[in-house]
Image (cartoon, rainbow, N blue to C red):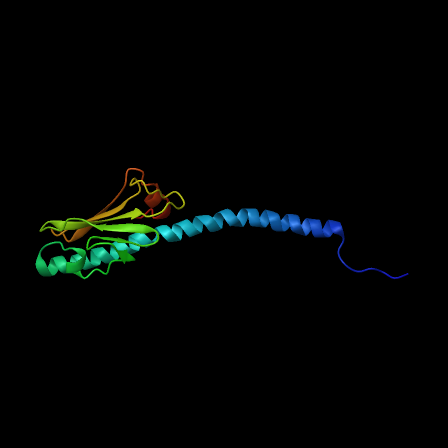
Length: 150
């Protein structure tokens, strides 16, 4: 009598169930990581802006606009003070002798970040003290969830 080799139906079903359980655990973690990576764009852009503001303030004694400080607007610039990437819209605040500001608002909703203006990454640069202070919008879920140190 000839012996058959291979896997039984039960063995194949057990493997499929194990793969299903592993994928059910891994997929939600992957989506959370994706949103975290998207939200990480804003603090990086703002940190670059703050560095340029600091250098400009030390030279001129006042805050500057995007163009004055040599800040290359991320993404597509719709005006001298507004630019947008796939994930955020950046707005250059009013520059004065006291300082300047920048805001980043999500352009599209992702993760817990919403576009209604309640999730804002904001930096206010003060010439006196050569420092920047960060604030979040009224919701602040985006910054709190994905960039807790902002």
